[in-house]
Image (spheres, rainbow over the protein chains, first blue to last red):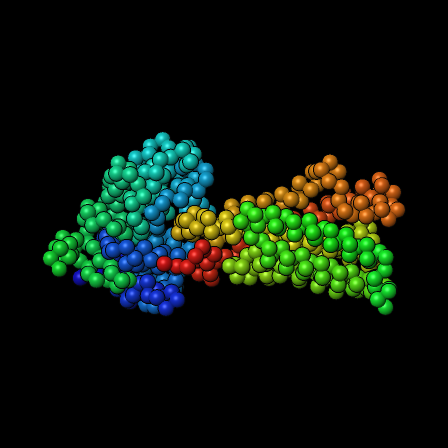
Length: 232
Length: 264
């Protein structure tokens, strides 16, 4: 085991119960710098709910989590969300241009993202020259790549990806998946990727967390976990 | 006593009320043939509206003989009732009543006070209360429209609001677009009223002034004065309530609480 400094994100019996129903229960995991953790499980297993707790879009009702060794309650929600970026299933781009969307996060802190950095991010996601394009002219795959670049533009310590390809057609799915894999590897990003498709998890992640009924059923290196799952 | 209460004018008014209510019931029955059932709501609204306005008429008849300061508690009561009515439009937003009350009290209170000081409203109770009630009623409608629109806009754009939050935006930034559109939408009736004044409609106040012997030109100008005041008070009310309500759509940890349906 490495030093605690390497652990970027640690959850300790993290859970959320709503109206007496446990959506996420006692999930304890560690994610190290540069790790890509795939989160899989059947529909309703609590995968997306777990991610929403880490970005604090929903409030944990039990346990806690630590970002870079700091308890989440010691970090303001805005600072936490800047450091724990999130890409949702649908792009949800804001009206305006692609560049305005990319700049949205830094703008919130009064930081102006240079044109060069915007162009570089767009090149990384395969949308070179799209900066001035209005977002309502983009295809689903292009919009999702902009949403990904918009989250990366905030320079997060951890990036949460919630089924980023599930709403796309096969070709767009492949393009977005390639972009995610290339950018994550090149930038050495720490990532948690929720997917219902174990093949996607196998292609993108180093380790895998299997959630069932809101609980962590299994966690470990991807081949190991998938082999155990296949034989059990 | 009954002779006094049921004067020829009152009997004539009751007959006219029955005729007008008959027209409303006929529309209700017409809707029923199209399987649109509004019988209960319409009947309750008709009976309630009639009783309320008759009671108010009696109270006004008594109060109009009183000192002019009595208009303050009357208008204050109207403001509270208006806030409660329009807050029902935003049932799922915590603090809707408080936001509505602040909006209506400040929006109409400032307009009524300023206009009275500047001489646009006669401080006599017989003028202040009817004009004030017009301002409050319109502010109530504008406020209700604004809150209803805000609720539906936010609930229809939960993904956009949460995407903005997830990128580190402040709650007020995440919903600013919907505050703006709610404000604009709520003012459409007031703007249309001003725009169509005298062309599409001749409002009741002007008609009443002409019937009671005021010069028609003065009645026409004063009608414009009233509608301009309605616009000012409604606009201020809506501006305050939408600004306040946008903060109530979030938890202290800046999570969106104004969401459609239960959490899954």
